[in-house]
Length: 356
Image 1 (cartoon, helix red, strand yellow):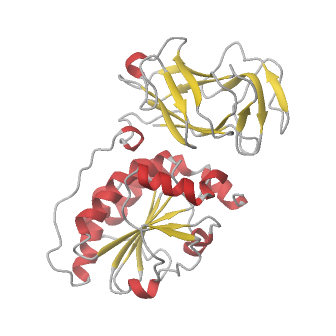
Image 2 (image 1 turned 90 degrees about the vertical axis):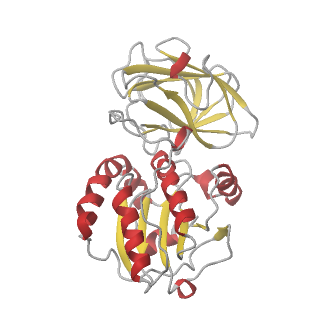
């Protein structure tokens, strides 16, 4: 179960991501750095497991430049940062850079080591990943949001901390600086320019106006229906609101609202959302472990060329693993639209909308 401080922090992710690039550029441009974020690098003993590596220690890492990336695999901001983190890990490995991903879960299903292992494989992450299922490393670092990058010099000192997306050029220059300070030979110059695909593709040029929206009772907002609000922890047959304003959502069919998610009891249930963004994502999973078919419509029509990576042009797709699904990518701009998803099988769990 996620701690209460982290729940409050999660609501800040979108704002932090918007501001992060400006903050990072201001603090690092022309060699100007922020003061150390938290002194020396904390112990990694609180990790509940490791992927791609045996357990690493701060003592063994002395003499190495270390980049620590706090992430969680259902977070769109984390996914869009990954192409850069992976590119840096590959480019600077020979020069002595050690990249460590710290996977701190947002949702309960992300606490399961098997789910994280599958996500690491699907995302082609090759560097060590520390499992932080009890948030011990999050607390040790005094972390506040996903994603977060910590830049540690060869003496084990945290030289910079960066929240959110963006600021990639000054961040890479800092990596080069720390490697040169460490005495590394042949530190590569230049800057990487990776191109992410699907959920890892960069956010649109026009910032999304719709914000992260949770469907579970703990953090739900913006819900409307003809028969009142959400019924907590019991099945109820909802009737959709006749019209939606921006950032409002509604349900049709028989749903049970739990703390983290909305669970569909019978086939044919629908979720509709009025959004303004290029991309629409929805964190989904199957309560039974069986595949769940769905159909997406935009303004009542098949999405056509506005379909996301997890649907076809008819809007058809399947929920399998518990993860973030990209359901809409508008081919032109970020117009305000009405999104609707109909589940053709029961048992889906719907957690949160995110946008890009």
